[in-house]
Image (cartoon, rainbow, N blue to C red; front, side, top):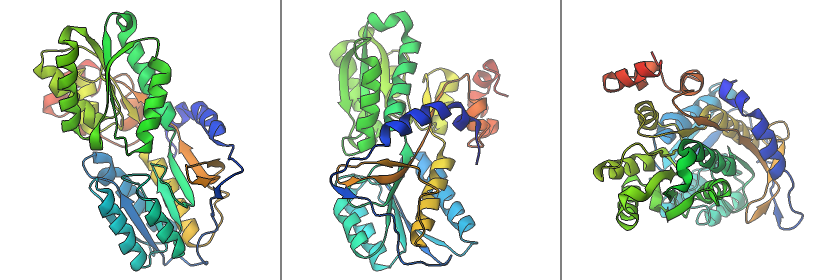
Amino acid sequence: MRRAAVAMAAGAMAVSLAACGSAKESGDKADSSGSPKKGDDIKVGLLLPENATARYEKFDRVLIEKKVKELTGGKGEVVYANAKQDASTQNQQVDTMVTNKVDVLIVDAVDSKAIAGSVKKAKDAGIPVVAYDRLAEGPIDAYTSFDNVTVGKTQGEALLKALGSKAKSGQIVMMNGSSTDPNAAQFKEGAHSVLDGKVKVGREYDTKEWKAENANSNMEGAISALGKGKIVGVYSANDGMAGGIITALKAAGIADIPVTGQDAELAGVQRIVTGEQYMSVYKPYPQEAEVAAEMAVALAQGKSLDSIAKDKVDSPTTKAIPSVLVPVVSLTKDNIKDTVIKDGIYTIGEICTAKYKADCDKIGLK
C-alpha cells in the first residue's frame, strides 16, 4: 500500500536505514533460511503484547491476518494470542505455539529480554521467529519496526517548536515508556538528543507498563514537586500516557501547554483537534504489518528474505538480522487530512463526532 505519509518521510528512512546497515562481525548471525519448504497451507503464530493500546487489536492483528490470507490464497491460518502486558503469559503463549507446531512466529515482545529463552525454544523446534515492532532478544530471523530514535527526535523537535521562546522560561516533564520495552529507550535517546541543552528537564519518569494511570500519578508528582507555574511542556512517549498526563494537568488547573504523543490513537487525534495535545507520531501500521506478514510467510515457506529486507540490524544477542524500518510522520492539527484520513486509518466522521465538531470546523476538518 502506497501512502503519502511514507513518501513524505522517505529521506528520513534512507538515513535511518543506512545508520543501521552495518552489522558487527562478532556474535550470532541471524539465520533467515526458514523452515523446510512448504506451500500456502501454513500456520502463523501471532503474539501481541497488550490490548490497552488501541493499535494492536484495531490495526496490527487485522492487517497481519489480512495480508497472510492474501499471500497464501486464503489457505494460511493466523493463530493469535495477546499477552495483556504480562511477560510470563507471553512466554507460555510461545510454548503453546511451539506445542501446536506453528510454522512461523511473529512476536511483539512484552519484555525484550524475558522473551529470549522462548525464542530459542521456538528456533530449536525449527520455527523461525519475526520480531515485530520491538527488537526481541534471542535468535530471531527477521525484524520490522519504525526508526525508534527518529520517533523520539520527531517528538522532541515538535515540542521545541511548540515551546518557542518559552523553552528557556520553565521546565518540562519527560514521561518515557516502560523500561522493559527496548523501543522506549530509543524514543528517550532520540528525544534527549534534541531537547538536551535547549530546555530544562524538571522531572523524568520511566512509566511502568506504559499505563495511562501510571503516567497520571507520575504527572501529579511532578506538578507537586515543581509547582504548576513552572511547567511549560510535557514530553509524553505515547498517546495513551498523554491522556493520563492531560487529566492530571487539567485537575491542577494547567492549560495551554504542549504535550507530545505517539501512535495516532483516535483519542489522541481528537485531543489534537481540541488543542489539548499538541502532536502525535503517525506510524503507518499497514506497511509495518504487511512487511511482517511477508517475512513470516517467506520464512514458513523456506524462502529467502533478500527481496523483502534490504538492511540488517543487531540486537544485543543476534547480529545481522534482516530488517525493514518504516518511516514516521509528525502529526499535528495541520496534517490530519493528509495522514490518518488520507491513509484510511480514520474517517472524518470517526474523528469529528458531535463533541469535537466545532473544533473540527475551526481547523477545516469537515
